Amino acid sequence: MAKTPLLCTSEVARWLALSVPTVRRLVRSGQLLAYKVAGKWRYEERAVEDLLDRSPVYSDIQKQKRRGHGRGKDAGNNASRT
Image 1: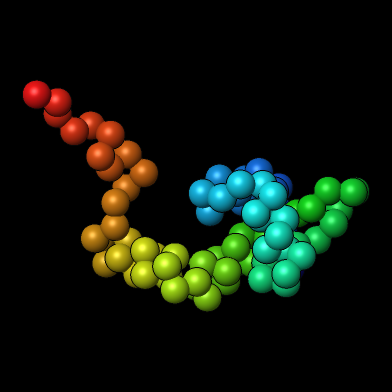
Image 2: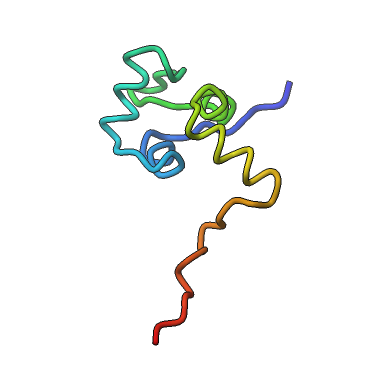
């Protein structure tokens, strides 16, 4: 059985572009699966991907990225200024 790396709350927050308290609220509401390991919350990548798949906003963005229409992480940062 292959082990999947677990993410910490701040990593999930960065991935989802949310605040840490918002990620915690998602866990409390049951929308995001998390495990408490040694007193700290940990998340499987699959749980975050499942949340994204269930979210209408994120799922549309993910569909666009899969088709090559999404903006990359650096898109817009290199626009020329005149």
